[in-house]
Image 1 (cartoon, rainbow, N blue to C red):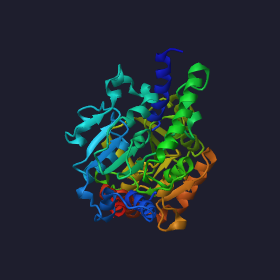
Image 2: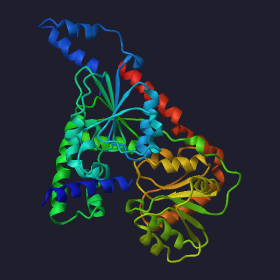
Image 3: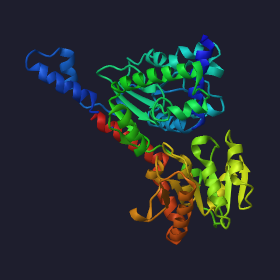
Image 4: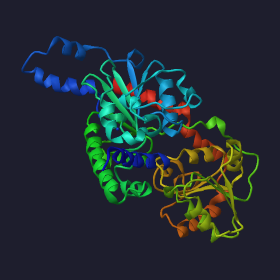
Length: 432
């Protein structure tokens, strides 16, 4: 197989991932170990000074923030934006930076230190094709001059090399899903489930899994964006993680003046979103109206599932103001995907709209069911049409108990200010 084909296979796996879109303190651990050694031999003067120094403060540290790559302003970049607000003097590193001038405004002119992948042939358009080189690239970034390293990781960022006197905190959006539990789905989506390219892709992902586990040992503290991701971290790395939910810009959303008689689904039409299940469930509920917003590679499958039912209305891709208006007026937002977190769900809540969601993944952290207090929605636990129909019926039974004000209040648990506060408090605790 040619090098070009090999690189293309690697890039297809990473591109598929893009489309589908807690350790003890290092100083304390090192100190304890060296105190045991110290009973037999004197400590070096430099180490003795380390043991006797006063607790470090966040504002006194040299900080490096490491992001996987910069291409579009999406969920991971929203987290990065808040990290940079917490640490305004931090230096920023990434495997590659090809973000447009319009989208990179949140960096406020900050220089991005990139790896050799930035300069490889055709990297601007095809940097994912160098997925197999990214572990090497991330470890070539020199972070030796920093006290605190924070990696924003869904691929390779946590693999940076750090020393015993550096603290490495990894905010994990997800372990590499295409290398772990969803490997088979991503290979199928990328057309790499057979043939020589498929064989190479499987070999590459096996190597990435080994590297991923090994580099987890270099992380001092794991942070997860949801309880679901914390469980995935434990499964993949056998490490515990502290959950700090990602920031959501709630100022763009507010409670509407009235509700209309329709349910809403809005997302990109890709296989794992299971849009066709929601659509088919409303084919079976002709008295209930569904408005569907979005588009994507699964568009044909979704429209076939609708069977031309008159109670299902497709809007395609709409401007943000139109989507917010629909969220505000909908009776409920229906969602059947298993998400790492689910920012769109929080945005719907912020509009005062309850949720009907698949109960695996991040939705379990977002939806408050009737059994847990003032409800903000209903969860279902099978990704099938019958389960969605039952959930809609359950929602209608408890709908009078759900208020827009309660939904909005629950959404505020995921604000940007809350994220910054929790993140800074966590850093202060581990440095104390």
